Image 1 (cartoon, helix red, strand yellow):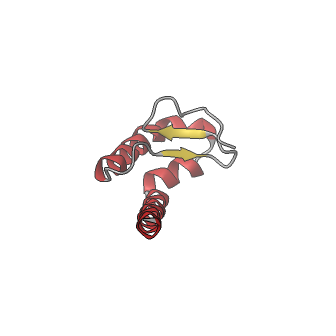
Image 2 (cartoon, helix red, strand yellow):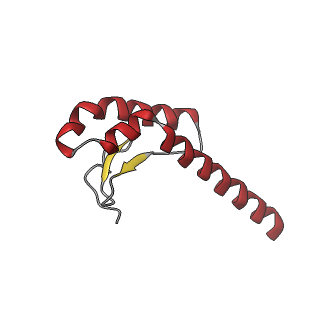
Image 3 (cartoon, one colour):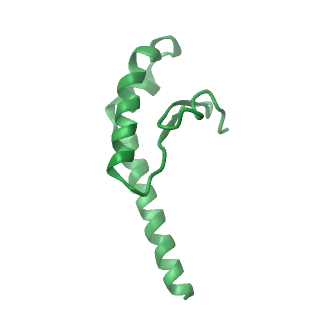
Length: 87
């Protein structure tokens, strides 16, 4: 039982790691996070759509969001996340 649970947990962590890697490679995410705060509004729709596509492509992901360097969510597939601090 413990071995099976450990295997499933390992698989989940591996999947999460791959999802974070995919998110980090999204050009829309990188552009949004690299932009000055005053320029982000124009980039937000593309980033939101890229996040939504990532969630649609992986049934194990319920939400995806981007944090700025201060740990504040700047984009998310969940409308409750943006503006919230995760620091």
